[in-house]
Image 1 (cartoon, rainbow over the protein chains, first blue to last red):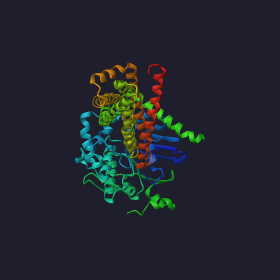
Image 2 (cartoon, chains in turn orange, yellow; image 1 turned 120 degrees about the vertical axis):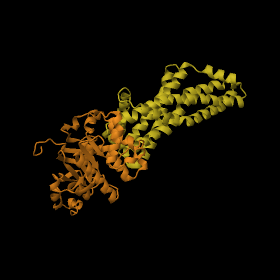
Image 3 (cartoon, rainbow over the protein chains, first blue to last red; image 1 turned 135 degrees about the vertical axis):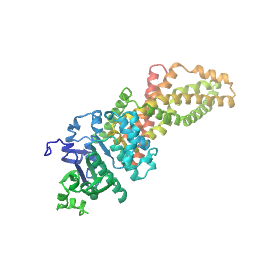
Image 4 (cartoon, each protein chain N blue to C red; image 1 turned 135 degrees about the horizontal axis):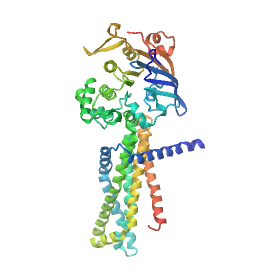
Length: 274
Length: 254
């Protein structure tokens, strides 16, 4: 429980996930609360993606419990999980847009297929346009994913993840494999989504600067840009950093604690604050 | 030894579970009719040319081969009978199904395999759809509908091929050929000729989906899944063919 008694949005209790006898997540416990951002750092193969997929109920833990919105995912059948998943947006690592559908159909997919969303057919097009405008991809409705650049695909995938207005969004390496300018644009969109929709965010990344942006910047809706977060403009974004190493959660704390750590592995991830 | 057996047993178990869920979904909402029609087009209409060619040439070859054998007994006019029976019972269903395995089991495996390795299957589950309902069941339904139809087409085209040879090379009359072909066929042959493609359709579609959905290891894995699906489907077509034929034979209905 948080200080004010609000229940957590996501809660891992001693979660272990193994593939072919090898633990890819080992005894991981943490809680994320409403409005909080969690930045999950770790090397490739440290279990970051598995952690997100477990939070979404795509992978079932071998032991421990995963709770989303207070409900135990382990106790639910796949069809029951669909309702929980409709409240969680997920950006997959390589975007995972459906190749056979155009961008409009891709973004409309959760609106049409998620039963608990109940989006009337006549509203679908408007909401898709709105979501694509949000990621500044307004003119691409008819295009297919293969016709877009990597950055544009990532943006379309963000639109698909947030089109239903989920209170919790999971981002799996949103800036991986992109040039620095495009990566910054993507991070700006994530922060925009967090600040305009007040979503709880789990961000998996191996780039410390992504976490730094998340922790210290906010979206200014007046000029449409990111700017350093100042206390005068309202409460600072609550950002917690987590570091995974070979499936174990070896660090959990704020940015100051992260930067002052003496651990070799952890300090490799953080550069000095810009 | 036990470890060696573990993997195939687990694979069979997985396949049975997949098949069970795919069949159960036929009777459960939501139904993705658009996907079924799309698959009918891809699997069925898309295979038409190749099936017609295979049917035509197998009819031609059967007429040529059989006429030589029949000539020894002075029964060349029975060419139509033999072409009709071999096509309806065996060659039509089996050759069509093997072409479908080569074209569609592998096609399905590579499509679903690519979706698996690019996390599209996970995305589908994350966005509120059951991949088996959305991907496997429509392919199963479409193949079960189209493969018997394609087999019938292959049979008729094969008979046509046999007729061309009979008239042009063996100098039989059209009437003689078609009469002997028509009279040779009994209901049992027709039943056998239609049950086989239905069973082969289940084999072709589900094996393709099975190997596609268990793909791991990136694009290399997709290639592997594609080959495995085709080989496994072809072998299973022959095994189920033996079982069905044996059933009909032992029933005395062959």
